[in-house]
Length: 236
Image (cartoon, rainbow, N blue to C red; front, side, top):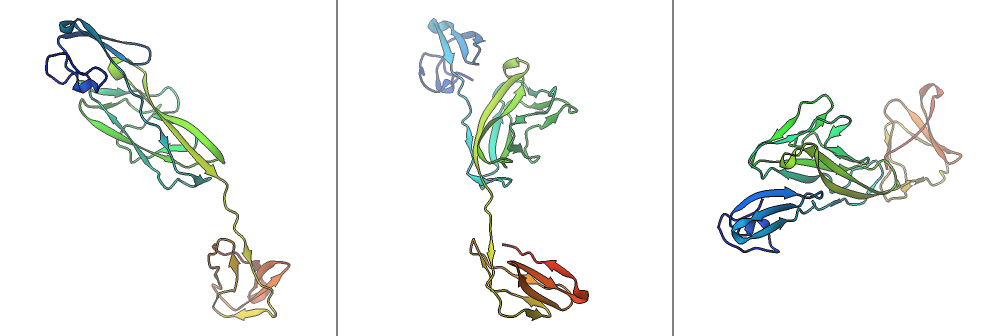
């Protein structure tokens, strides 16, 4: 947490673990989680400022589709000398995650529900949460992933990482078919001269029996044995 193991006085405004202390005997916390140490040998009170985790900004993606950079990895490390306990949630899950984001079951940190037992992370150990962005609405989406534990032996402490991403509307793809001069009759697979709005080829297949493919009122229909008629669809 603080001190490099060598007695002395140095390290102000630097990394806490690189500082030299001389006889730290007590500590306390403020309401933001910053730590105050009594450095009695140097007749100082030394402050360790807790830095919030950097937020995760996900790549833009289409609604209902995971972003290309999902999942992102959040690492939780226990730098203390006792096990860290992950609390059983009263409602929902621990960690909790905002709508549009999810945590994978492949994460190595405990994923707890109201029916779970408390999870633990041993002293000096670490685990990961794999967080993905799969938006359910269009627009700019923000939120957080919040883990509840007993950091510094304070029950129900929360550790949070900010999450954000932008969801784009689905692309509406269209197929343009040229007007056939005569119906096209095939006995197997037919590839039609169609143009997709995104440039992809369009292929239709006859799966059984003879069929006639004909354009009627800007729709494409397949006529099979017994005069069955069905509107065709294809992959874009």
